Image 1: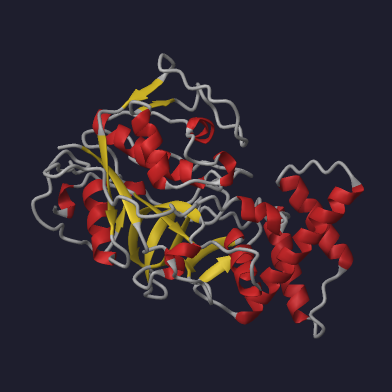
Image 2: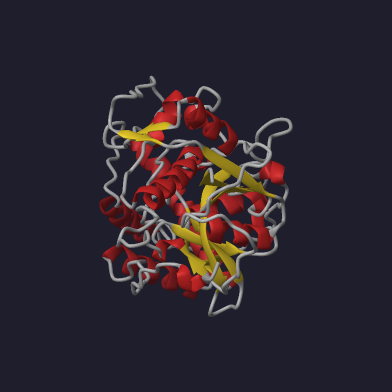
Length: 385
């Protein structure tokens, strides 16, 4: 498949990290002042002032003294991490303040809802002889010619101006990343099949899939099997909005939504980077899971805290495990490339933590070394040919 056949939306992408806000300026001043002191200690009043600015920007409604102490303590730990990261001079990725900067470790852990399926899992639901349709309506007959970079966030449906990737969403304080990642793939299929946009309901998956655990996590296979068992029907997010908690299943077949024609899924084998690139270009975004940190060791706590504070650059933390069994956060690969500053190859990945996190809701992670287990497995969805 030649890259010239892709319809690209050539938009000048401006880095969306705001640097001129009062909070950002205050943070930079605080870090510079702290690092210039021989003791490295921070001024208590300066921390409190920064915390007040943070609460204002992120619309925090702190109701009790105990809650304020808890949030201030978490915020202070984040500040210390930012200072230490800046002091170490790591140039491949940057950290900053965001909506998670006053969260506790337990709250951050709840975001990681990817669960590894137990036992032997089918690599595909396709029957012998069944073939998958490429995203642009063809049947793949040969290997795709791999461009040096690719990015679905810059692709529109053929003959339209409709982006094939929808706006970033936010799972909030619920371990529903698996639902957001799967729905992203389904929304992509809807756009390329119908040449129109429909925002689908993650809440339906959280509430109605009996083989997943709502806000306590799930995986691709069980989520896909639920959609299939539900006659390929998904309600719209406007009818069945996201609630940030699991509740009673309110799906209605007669309500606004979509009924897909039967879909197939397939799996790219572990550590097959070229295979992942081929699948991405032919069939669309890839559902993957990776290790985003945990509270089980100091190194893993550091990874958890740093990833929650990721601001930009190529994510490649020290000590990140590559074992498939450690993966705990589901995301979607939408592209790849090579960083122009560091020359590090990367995957471009869609997260579900809102558009103020990371690079406008996305992050880039080192490609080709199974960083944090992200190349252990990759799933993709396609229409039956």
